[in-house]
Image 1 (cartoon, rainbow, N blue to C red):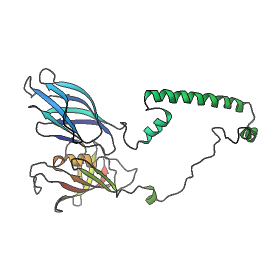
Image 2: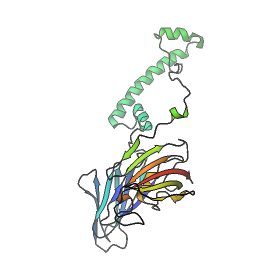
Image 3: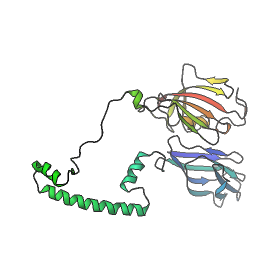
Image 4: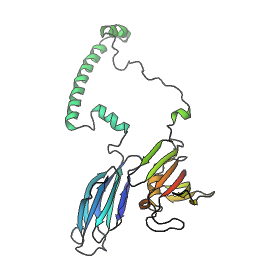
Length: 296
């Protein structure tokens, strides 16, 4: 999934972890042509309250573009030192050691996705097992299928692979039992951004992801509880992930499925910042109750 953004002087950009645990790969940093020639601009990153460190330094007319290879899987903030903005491009990677990845767990059991030395040991052990299995299969191949019981007794009750009785019992469950409870699903980030999953819709419903046009119903409140905006009968439509709405919405709605409901707590730096917007005072933390009704 493509990522693009601009970091301006004096305006740090928060990098909030992807709702599905994907990591952001920063691939390239560039200066626009408007930056004065030979001006130096540094791109910095600050992770979890640590001191900011320099990712790269660009010089207009000399080194306008720098290739990066930086993965960011936790909350961080980007900033610049210098007189010009830095344009960033990259992508979100779904296979970057995220938590709870079933595929990665399965790969680890087979010896893949491990340290090279562990892979070699796993392969050697696998070869030994395969040789033993191959010998057993050759011996079994010489016998008639009607002699399965005799073979089982000779092997001490061991049943050869392929004839193992199923050990998983499949039971019918109700929808209520099958769907995980979303009431306790809360994600909180260091900059004050929060995602509360209050209701889950169809787990196979349409997924809201960057570039898709989504339709939502919402109620927006200040921290005092005062409602400053809400949808009427017609849902609000916008294209996700392209900056048509505040950053807190682009991040908070992504990953929802049709029928899902979330409460978003959005700090000023992911909302309207230090500017007054209609009834919203400067530096306001906002709360939105959002329901996803359609994805196109």
